Image (cartoon, rainbow, N blue to C red; front, top):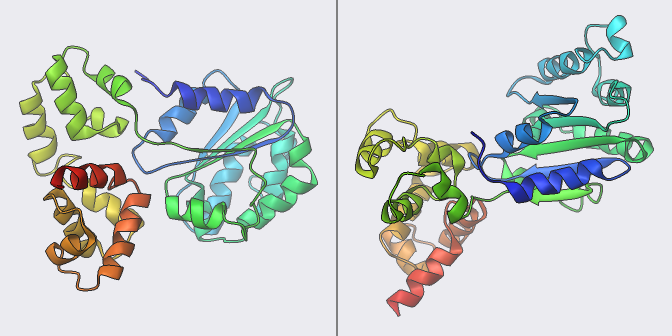
Length: 300
């Protein structure tokens, strides 16, 4: 059952219903529910949904081509795959969606660019030439937040200024999150939210038919379960020096909020470096700056 994300769906619908070409960038930390939200948005609409793979560029192009050619575009009568990205993106205009926007979602777009850094330039040229004035909607989705913010949306990037909509998805709010546990007491709902936050993937790991205590034992503390090694997984996806970042997270979790305290407890001698590590964790949403400020005020 899909829960929440009314604001995100409303944003996507407004882009879809607007006239002219739409280039939307939807991004956010991993597990926050981007893919499920996009699939919910696409439901009932003719569309192409492509989930990028961590694969060589040629294989990526082949897989993307197959998605487009399955839609019975004109080129499908003559070829089995496109031999270059420009032709593949151009084929979006051939999608046979009469009287409806030609909707294409590219999930985990950073994977597509990883082995072919020229893809944003190819897309930019086609966007400026024809796509922006056509009845198309292209959604670029990604979890690699540093790539999205510092490369894709940065001023020097080819796609800078082309996006008609940019939406950074964050965790669910409290009242949406507790809808995952309709039978819990109010106290247990608050406790569950304080443990899991508003990340849909984490919320779904708990069985609402089990008590809060049993859920913690089975779905967090038991080795092999999804949440047991989640922090390590997230750090390895986005950052290097994971051991250092883990020590900083531990220092903050133990109640240290001042930079020099965090540096000392994490055994990072240079406070300037600690500040950089901390900034990266805040940007990724792993540490909340509001949490640090609240702890600081409490300590004072």
